[in-house]
Amino acid sequence: MRESKRFAQRSSKQEKIEPRKKYFLLFEGEETEPRYFDMINQNRDALNINPLIELVPLMRSYGENGWSSPKKILDRLLENLEEEKTGRVTYKRILYWITEYLEDERRITIRNKLMAYAWNIMCQVCQEDLCSNLDDEVEKKDIQTVCYKILSILQQEKVFKKMVDALPEIIKEHSITFEENFDKVCLIIDRDKHSFKADNQENDQYGYVLQKCREHGFGFYLSNPCFEFWLLLHYDKVCECDKDKLLKNEKKGRKTYIERELSKLLPGYSKSKYNVDQLCSAIDNAIKNEKLFCEDEEGLRVSLGSRVGLLMQELRTRESPSPVYT
Image (cartoon, rainbow, N blue to C red; front, side, top):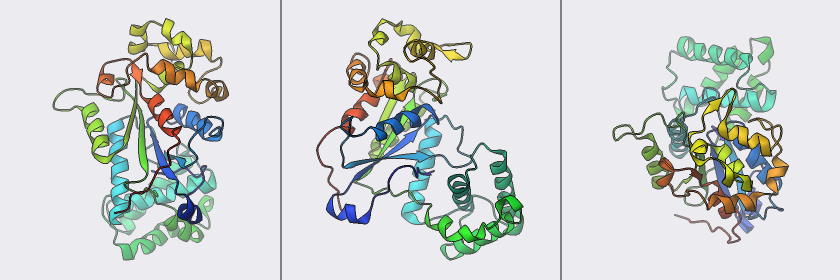
């Protein structure tokens, strides 16, 4: 995972005068949620977002694309943060750095066949040339050498020429700039059956994710059954919908019940393309309507509702966040 480069970085000059608290947004979805919060960021003044809060979406690395399990996504983030804290780096992590550079600088998407081709080449280098498994740890003194070896072989393919020249940038730009006890991670996830495949005493993924969020002070902003329900809350018509059908959210054709109801109010809606400006003007309404449904993190196991409105309220508070130094 990595920070989205579309959002401004915290500057050292600003930090000395007025530290900005980063809200790292970790999405389960890869289209609907990022598009919505991009709109929030672009309209932060009109929405009265606290100027001392910076929104930072966390983007998926190659191999993490398509994950829908909140447990799996959360575990990967915790692993990344632990690496940042301890300085531990695996061969797989170095490969993620390189694919992130390819996506950010060379406009190769993680779904592109060329990215898969590059990944296969790099895996082969690790296994055959470096005689290492992807989960093996790389000594700090060897990181640059390992990167150089992988890039040297990768650039033998014409499409990846001059990769070695990018070595300093690849090594420098990989970190997640999370400040413990000051910044906040916000987990924005769904409750639907595809998200939490088990819910019993032995394999309670819902309880696991909730407990980990509590332990680490992460925000737990879940919607049951899905994030699209939060979008539907922007309209008072949501109160006229069949609540049982909303919760079951059964699919008919290509769309779920909520998507069909949302399309009536938001013409042309699809997960990757919809009128965010129309929603922007109705956020107060969404916060109000959310109060009519479940907002309790335990209750949302089985009840229709959302907690995204609570996040929006938090982003709009005017209290200046103060850093805690240890």
